Length: 158
Image 1: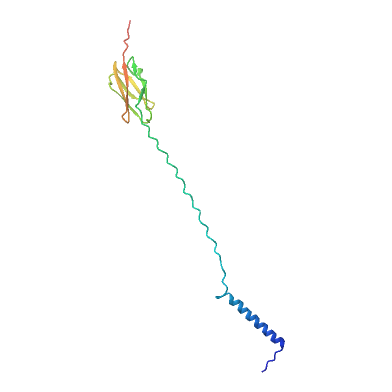
Image 2: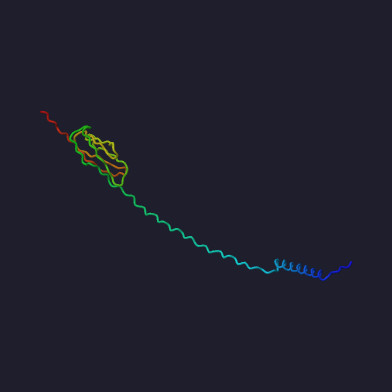
């Protein structure tokens, strides 16, 4: 069989072949051996150092205040008769001390002593004529004394 092609058919065939060749050439560029594209990397920013916090200085501890010796008031105590009706009270204070005190009569034939109703107070009861001291002491061994005199006033009956 014989094919007859006119000039228009030949022209169409050349155009189609050129398009096919051109398509292959374009497709061939994207693979290996094609033009490489250059990618500029984004620079990594240099980290800013975080400043270290300035340490707060610890306060210098204050020395613990040392208690002074106890003080009893009033001191001395003077009684003019004996018995509970003549009781007197004294109070004990001591700087830088918050503890308790003890009080002991050195002669219970002259006076007795007992804790009062208020903190750091003591009630003294005259028992007989004479002089003595009451020893007052804190829990740390610091002490003071209260001087006591009991005189009995004679009553004259006429």
